Image 1 (cartoon, rainbow, N blue to C red):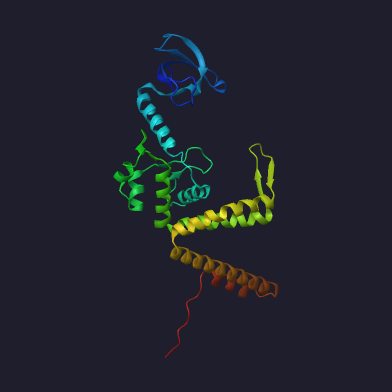
Image 2: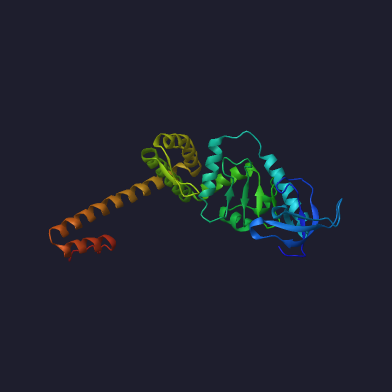
Length: 286
């Protein structure tokens, strides 16, 4: 944003459909004021000079048509998503999107948001990773590419993509489920400590956390169903194996500490070494 540039001005900055006007930037106020001095280029009062909040300058005037198109299509996608839906299903879709292994590759609206949509930053890569046809995804009702190349679609598409992610990447999704479930189970016993933005500590009691766990159990069950029973069984076996390895490592560490207490540091050191890099098994001589 620079002096002399022509921008789209909207008095109600975040109200879709509110009129926009072309203005020229004349001067910036002190940084803390967040004000900018503008001159209206057209409209009822061409040449009018006044100070306004900087947030009312939405996009460069050259980009206004593409911006208004995106705004209109986004609103239509949100309207198409306003249908009765299970909160359990929305949470499951969100967790599945969270489990997609490519960072920032898939965004499904948070379940409490009023706009249940899906956004994909790199549609060709995303479609390829799931074995989908990107042209078919673009043909979905109210789906479109915005001016930045981001794919946007309504809730029905979000749900189908969430299920596909769970089908193609079950281990990643199940890992997120297990992680969240363990966290909620721990907090149901000990409560949840957090810090407010101002730095003050906060605490949610175990009783409330237990309610959250109870609410999420149907969500986790639905996600496991989407991932498929064989995948769940395989993941549970892997989790059990990891738990057993952790238990054995703890036992070895306890044994090493006892040997140290008995003044046998070399044996303790060897136990710890073997725990990290096990020695190969010896073969019997013929």
